[in-house]
Amino acid sequence: MASGTAGRARRARRRVRVVHPAAARTRSAEDWWWDRLAPSGSGYHLLQSDSMLLVLPGPGPARPRAQRRAARRAQRLRSPGSRAAEAKPRTAPAPTPLQEPDPGWGDRVPLEILLQIFGLLVAADGPIPFLGRAARVCRRWNEAASQPALWHTLTLSPPLAGRPAKSGAKAEKKLLSSLEWLMPNRFSQLQRLTLIHWKSQLHPVLKLVSESCPRLSFLKLSDCHGVTPDALIMLAKACPQLHSLDIQHSMVESTAVVSFLEEAGPRMQKLWLTYNSQTTAILGALLGSCCPQLQVLEVLRLLNLMWLPKPSGRAMTPGPGFPSLEELCLASSTCNFVSNEVLGRLLHGSPHLRLLDLRGCARITPAGLHDLPCQELEQLHLGLYGMSDRLTLAKEGSPLLTQKWCHSLRELDLSGQGFSEKDLEQALAAFSGTPGGSHLALCSLNLRGTRVTPGTVSSVISSCPGLRYLNLESCRCLPRGLKRAYRGPEEVQWCLEQLLTSLPSPS
Image (cartoon, rainbow, N blue to C red; front, side):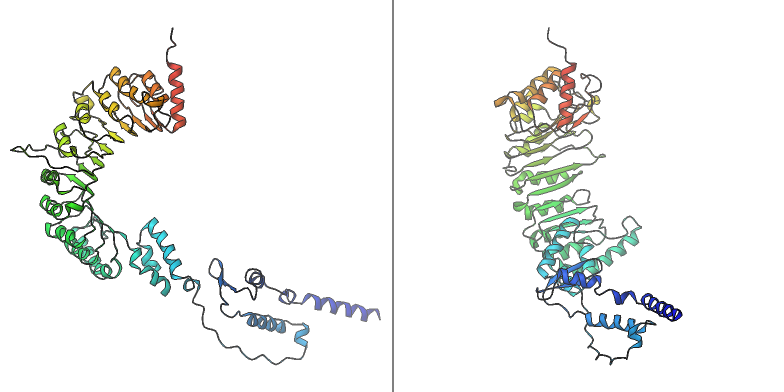
């Protein structure tokens, strides 16, 4: 009797051990998430992608819950020793019709939302290569990536730049064949275009741009060769909104630039040039009032060229100049020969100038700057870097600058200038003589290599609470340990404390 009872207990334990885990689990993790995030009757459905769960509106595709239940039931039937295996087999349910494969969540996102998402990515990283890759994902993404509104800013550079000439020309022809389709189909709303390292196929590219991009407003040519007058004139006529041209570091004939300015000059607002032996003709065209709306003019001077403006043979009647000019940059890293006369001819009609960068222009004097018509100058850069030892610099005149523009100056650079201690003291005292005794506009002051004294520096810091940058490197009249650049209000205030400590107490 006892043996029979023990045998039945062992068989009961065996039956408990062989129960499959799937039979004990009534709900899977997927079922739990489905019922929690998109319950039946809520008007939403759950869609699982590679790395996320999406809750989308609408009924969605039919859920394969019946198939999962049938699979678990079949697995229990195959388990040895289970009650389901010993029971009478049931009739198999009728097979459900096969469903079409789910195209994925990318096709469910509305086109307007995709355009907004793509627009943010294009604004951050540019249209290439993102839009080209996105167009291969699905039809909806291809439709969104093909919208010309996303292709408003573009940089084109042929591959294999720096390789032998034959390889470069072959790469340019290959890219040109692609552009023949892309220009009319993708770039119809292009606004800003940058071309880099084009040597042999630049003219065909500019021709395609003139034919397919009527909304072009900015063109930059960097390290490009073969720019002809016909190409620039063609652009000026075909692109009525083109108002900015950057041809720095490119080989462009002066006749091409002059012809372009004669055609598009009335609407030009920004112009970037590289000084060479032919720049005088371009500046002559500019002074002839061909660009009355010009706001930014920058002439970059290369290290191996010296600016020597040729005097005109006969007296020229000055034109209206540039009434809308706001920024002028004639800076260079070495000495050039821009004089007060040249600067006066450029700026005699520019009352709205805000930025004047004359770094390296050692022949410009404070008296010449004081005669300029601009009254609201915000940034003035007169630094001389690595050249003050070889030049005879003016020792007086700096008060003329600060007394005229102390109310509007935000950045002032006098590094390397030879003004005396007394002259600098009088000049910087203008910032403490403003109404209220506090100058809030000045935020950057570069006095590197000047003869400024500790008392003058402390007075400036106390009078300018908005000062964020102060450069006192190589200032021979300051105590050791303070000859450095200070960035941020905390460092500037620390400098003030140290200067006040080092100053001798009044007797």
